[in-house]
Image (cartoon, rainbow, N blue to C red):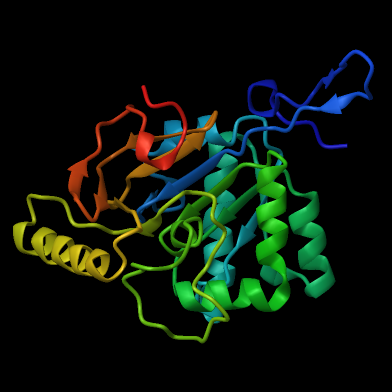
Length: 265
């Protein structure tokens, strides 16, 4: 039986109710999404390292989901991430692409952490649907297994892949994704000092919301992290913006984002 850290779980005890059977208290999901460019060589960049350490504290083995990476580059990306997770705290990591279909499901089921890398979002989501891994990941995260995703891996953590930045390089049964964060995710958002790029991206997202006015878009710059923990989403590193039909606001580091659920204060 895999045991997770006490703070994450809330599950390590049974709540005994008078006159009823014992009821297991479900853990709160922990989800980390990065806007991309989170590594410095074979290590996680200094700016994101403390957040990654908090997120994966107590984890022994991470399942790497590298479907979005070009097939010829998956071995190299796995090696980089293996070194990065060892540096993070002696965490072992293995990519699904090393195993057959049954082995991939076993790895997702056995690992006590998940990390989904960047690349081609449509290829990633299509493969997760084709293999049935989308539902397995969703179920494991709901059970308390920490999820991390960068770029494409951040995109699929949202309700749907709506503002991915990349080409639809593969067909997908649906744009609906994991639904771990109550928004569509926009990674690699340019910072304001890159004025033309910033305004261009903002204009595209605002146009998207004119056609999809009920949606919310969470945008993250490179090396920027938003994290869901204890039912609350916060910006924990870098820069982020929340776009809605009525307007856009820059997120404040460390403050809760009430529009994405959780307490309003």
